[in-house]
Amino acid sequence: MKETPRLYCDITELYAGSLGRGGFYGIARVVAEIALELDVLVPDTYYVVFSASLNRFFRVQFQRQQLLLGRPASFGFNLDRLVFAFDQQCSRWLESLPAGVAAWLKARLRWLATRLNRGSFAPLAPGLVFSAARPKFISRYSRALQAQQLELASLLHDFFPLLDGNDRPRQAFVDGFAVDNRLVLESSAVVIANSHFTRDCLLQLQDAGQLPMHRKLAVAQLAHECRSPQVLSGHGQVGLEAAPLAKEASPFLLAVGCRPGRKNLQLILEALLLVHQGNGAAGSSAVMPRLVLAGAVRGSINRSIDNPRFASVRSSIQLIASPRQDELIRLYQRARATVLPSFSEGWGLPASESLWFGTPVLVSDTPVMREVCGNLGLYFSPERPEELAQCIIQICRDQVFYEAQQQLIVAAKPTLRRWADTARDVYSAF
Image (tube, rainbow, N blue to C red; front, side, top):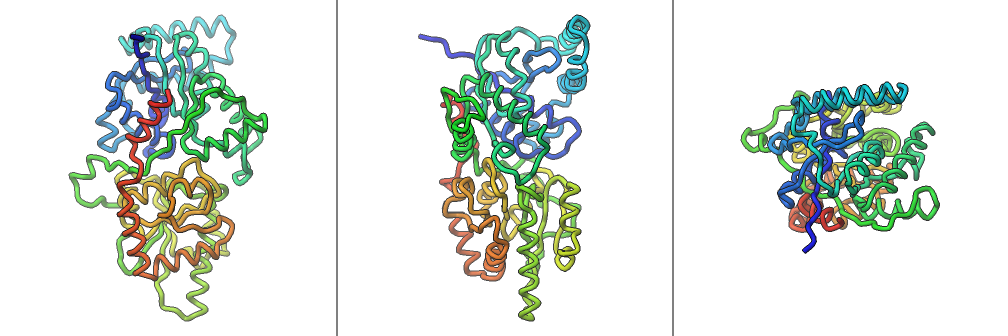
């Protein structure tokens, strides 16, 4: 019988995410959740981090309990983490030195890292590395894979810089993103898309000749499940530093990671303005719903909401900077609805996680949101704020409709995807 190759799970993204940041969103969350489930599905999985300076993978201990306790920012906070931080700082510096000098320094670094990590730098047996990291990480793996007799299975998240101009990134970024994805495709034995929509985007780019074809392409849809940290279950409600959010007379809409551009924050602001103007024109005493913006606070967000055009609704907007996972869960649970107005997403975790907690979702009518939400979402055009305004009015003022929507979501929960489903699909792909 042919021996099953050793499986290595790349958690470089988690180490990078633990360097000076408290939040844990997007790709880092996906890496963590799949790693947790692979740890159960394939108990003899090894976990590795890539050394950019030494061009090789080395083994690290998988700190499962840290993730389950809801403390991802402390993930890897040990000698491994310090070595990784040093490695990231010096890798680009080494590339700028003459080859002989760089080789000598790398030898000294390897000696130091081996002394600090001891068994971590032991040779890896041939096998397969699964990585869901950002392309800018995976694109650097090629030489290490060859040298260590490893194959690669990569999970791809999105291709927006190559397909739309909503965020208008610098051309240098777009070119670099294209090069990184090309290298990922060329070095991967298996390519896995995080949704059918992402797969279709890749096929579109391949047909246009922008990215190389790949012989094995699979899909592992992400999950609706939002794991509650164990620390949350043992302590009542989480106290947010922001103003109270649970006033029954003042419902709030939640937008997670929403900003101008592709994330389409401007549409929510225009819709709120329409709701406010409708209240004034009708002399209505209806309560104006608040908007809670959760996530990284960017200058573009502040500039948008401080625009004089939105002065009349500015007092209804609240920012919560980079909430912890337990805080984010409380926001999902207390929100009247979660709004995701993006022109496009690779999957759309805020919408899927909101459904997991039985909270209605107001989402843009795009292919990926139809894939994620099905008949559980309330849809509007991402270019028509009046449609979102009508959804807001209906969900906030029609209690019968609101409760019916909640019941529909709760009844569908057994059909929603779990991270274990995603991990099984990933494992099946390779």
